[in-house]
Image (tube, rainbow, N blue to C red; front, side):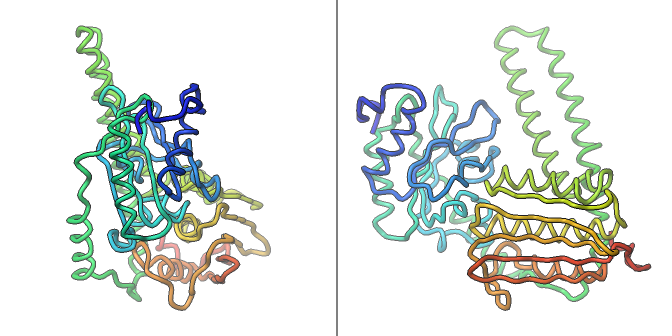
Length: 399
């Protein structure tokens, strides 16, 4: 379905070209969901802009950096991807790497990089919400019909990424090195946080600063090279900027500086904004705290518990919104995380991610003498943390 295969209305120009294209592809091949994700420039994030068959607007809020998510992987690698049955082909612990899968409940997809001048500028995603042996045939028919061209872009439809060896290796590793929840987890929490803090600072104050120095040196070269050299200088600086962004994200994930310098609520607001961009879930934040700082142990453990709860809601609930509220009264900190998603069996939750999130949250709550309650069902999930604002002596070690 090259440019010549679209109707005259589709070719009338403007955004309507892309919007009409996804609608026509969906109608012609019977896909449940079709979307074109766009990236503004090399290294820029990709967003699913034009879609047909969406169940909500949630997917439009997903922002994918190169190498992350279906769109980000296709942009970074320049190679197409195809999964006919996600449940069989991808380890459940890898689902969270594909936020569009959660947003639109996809069970099989084909992602095709779209290029101009050999640079990936967009990604075409076609997908089904059911599993059928006929679906791969539909993907192949689309590829053949496109004939290597979609509107003003070339379609990359060869050399599909081979994930089977990676997936098999991960499954084998999971069997030989099962993740266990240990009763002594509380005794290593302090060491984990100290190590997180050390690595975070090393990334920010060490590696990041060295890269900035290299970037400045490269920029000084620009005045001494020809036009071709200037292009290479710009390309090198663009690569360094992308690395710096990724280092920053890793550093924040390990130990946000806001938690140490600004406090619990500020750090949570910052983390919530990151989750919104990554997973497309709107996080409604209501903070009503009487002060900005609490005991360090309380701040750290409450932050980690809320972070895990919000992340799980974004990944697994299927809800468009997650509600987070904070308040303190009579010497107690109250935090609640609510979603109106699919819920789960609290007694026998299915293993997703590392499988130790809930247990880790309970351990962290016990470290600070807090009460953690969990209610989940068809109406959604509510997690409530009630913690004493003055952590008992001896608990301070578990920062």
